[in-house]
Length: 354
Ligand code: CP3
Image (cartoon, rainbow, N blue to C red; front, side, top):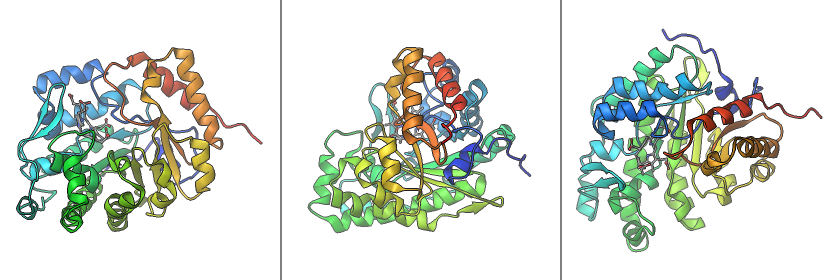
């Protein structure tokens, strides 16, 4: 049996229930800005070994939780574990990011894709989840995650990060049915992957749609959101007698929040280009909102960081249904002491009483 949860502010905020303080966690909170992460990473040798060794993944997941009083932990892994176990030849190259040796370039490549079994091929992720739940000992909830089908397809077809997505958009505008076949396959993989994380102990899950914002409005609805909505509908939404909240994050998705909320997700992640107060006005009380400080604001002065965090908290206003976060991942040169200042300023903030 797992220990009872001592701090459930994050889970409560996702469900728009009352909280003691606005909860805060940071995308990429376990990462290169932390000296202890760099030390474990050096010991592991490379990034993929960190992801595939449950003891190391557990160790780095807990590093930010041990250092700062954050309100949630996020599984240390990567969205690219799915294409990795599908055998596309993933490597992380220094200064380049992820690169696939065998990107998808034909209908035959797409037809040949396997459907990975979460408890065998992706067992290292489930073992990490189980180990983290044991080691975290109920201090804060654990968030599991996956990439959106569209975002995974971007990497699998382009073979690496891209600015203009020539290959995948070329396919979208020439053979949309084939692209749909790939996205449907990935939606199934992501659904069973997230359900397995929930069964292993993830107490909330987040879908990262990093590249959904590169699409036109109709293409976003058809090629990204439709598949995320299918996933949301097929997730196991209760475990250990609690609701398991789902967070959808489309970077650059500020125009589509109403449609995203209609997916049935409990919370939406916002990048910093959308005003949180406007988003709240548009959506009423239908969903919780997560975000949305510019990660580069952490390079400002301590006073500047507190000012910006306070502006965001006040822009949302009520303090109910808000999960404080950055609008995208924390960057490697971020001063560690600035993170402590941010966490303190969010957790000590209280809404003005009417
Ligand atoms: O948030 C967390 O702390 C949990 C861990 C996490 C990582 N990647 C670890 C990581 C999560 C949630 C991700 C998601 C992820 N991975 C996304 C979606 C979120 C986003 O950032 O938009 C994407 C697009 C990826 C793919 C990926 N992985 C890229 C493009 C890169 C290189 C980027 C970089 O900063 O070098 C990675 C590597 C990666 N994933 C690192 C970490 C900590 C850096 C690896 C290292 O060199 O140690």
